[in-house]
Length: 342
Image 1 (tube, one colour):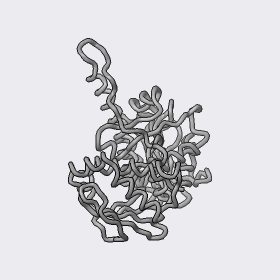
Image 2: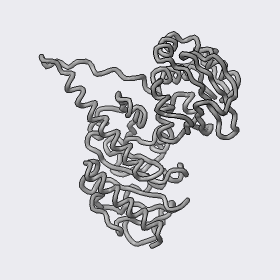
Image 3: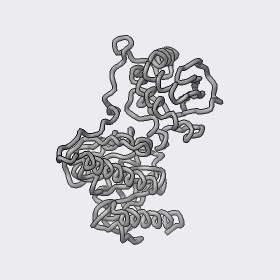
Image 4: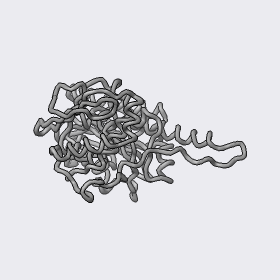
């Protein structure tokens, strides 16, 4: 066994134990994998306990399903291999059957967290219908993972991907803890007479953005001058953003850049209002992303804050500083939905 594979097996064993110790795995449920190379991965074997993994419980295989060592690989090999095929930058996949998450998604189709940390790191999590014990069609999972690095297979479990196994662990732990908080908060809402108070309001779902108010639903060319000008018009005309910007004193320079072309637009904000636009790549904050991600952001399929924390987008600048303007920035991103792209 070469040194790289030995290290990955050690990491898988450690994360399996961590999931077990944190009650995020039980019995013989769940499976873990890590990328070895472009077309090879390590994947836990079938009928293994994530809390008691050994080296021979983790099998070396190719993405086409060919095993490179003896054993019986997890029945979820299709789920894992399809994720790696579709996301070349992903190096690890974590799949478990978490208790509170599974219970929540038996009764709900999506989860919108209310605590700020969860909004940043997981955002809205969507449930995917699952009708078989193992995944036989990974297509819906892959499509949802383009939007968010964690998703839930209803009646089954949760799957997360990341640059390493600890990334996946953190996403799964964050979702489980957020759902616990949601459940406990609902208990606190029961008044003395036993009547259930209304559930706390949440922000509108990412998928339910309102159509453009411009041009009867017109769509704009991505990063076109027309698109940027329409964004400025809508942002500066919004009364809610004006109030939030003045209240938080949102004054900064923010630039957005398209990876493929390097095309950049910068916005100078003064108390939430865009006072000037330009092409300054040295703005205090610079957000860069590939075309597919920007298109999803402008069409409100991806939350920009979540995309940044999950590394789908790259932010240059002090994240802690920009996060103090979370409320006005969130409003800006909502307004982007009124300027959808082709």
